[in-house]
Image: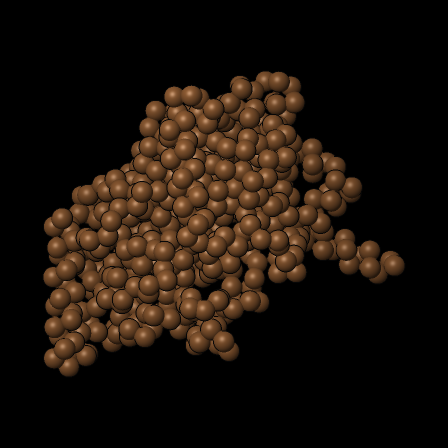
Length: 509
């Protein structure tokens, strides 16, 4: 309660000074906002109990701020999730649910990006930071936009004022930084090789739906190495704020954009695909040391950012500020999975504090859909696929490779955290199942789900990874053989080889 009381006092001070016409002084009191989006991570931080990893910077941010223990994504893929955080509306309502689609289509009225409101409130909106890998400038939203420029939603579609150069001292800033290192990529091996304290594969704890093999343990440890690298990047950003005297009046919001890129994770509606780390830290207005158990959604960061900036939250938003005292807690989080590259799913999930209900509208497709992009980046899938062919997986592990999916799933999140037993047909859980179905129907009665409409494929560019996989199967069987052993082939390198082969083919024709 004290945390939220301090926020109220903070905003009352800002408001009073603004009424006296002291605009410059009021602008200085408005908090800076640093929004950190870590790619493809679930709650795999030390402060969330992950074994084998050290994340001291984020541990401290959590202990000094508010650590949300039940934050869930409204989507399990990056661009739909980033879209709902930028707009403050569930992606299936704003027609931004299909991965990297609709990039030439403006947002429907009345929707606007949160940066438009922040600019109106006197904020400079900054994208990225030169203190992190790839400058942290990823945006990746599913509506027409440009990185820099003005926004009116009709002729101008700029989301930010500038790339990170020098933080402004004469007006408050909103800075969005993507922590890219945790995203699957060829740099993972290099990060692990350069680490002075590599995560020990023997020290990690694998969920029961993974086969326990040396390759899978090594891959898991390599993922946690990226977490430690990312944690250090957050430390660099904090030191920069401290050096500029801006740390106390900067609210930091740290969240994952979607779950970890592995079995049952990114792209799926199970716990590791939806459960996100979320930490809010604001020395000037939040008391620390709080672990918040209430249910929150990824979309809520949009309303939280506007609330922190003293901006009135638009009525159309489905987001709720998680630092506003009088907000009623969510009964459930509604999540979705739709088109991802060449693979279409129409799965929906209802997550409450006790249960998860999943409705699969497309059932004649395996969870292991052989999606081309994922073939390059999931060694565990290749290894387990081989073990499954030999009937060497447990019943739980083999479910991922079954040719079909159940129409409905229900899991007891408290007593079965790994979601091993589908309770949908258990007689003693029929009241729970009906209640969860009721939540699903209520959401669909109140909202239009664009994900259930027919896809306009020209708005969804085909991925290059499909062509490359076809080429590898035909021309490079030795690479396919390595992938089956859990050896990542290096997508970037193969892409260059494929492009070269295509050019040579064109010349010969």
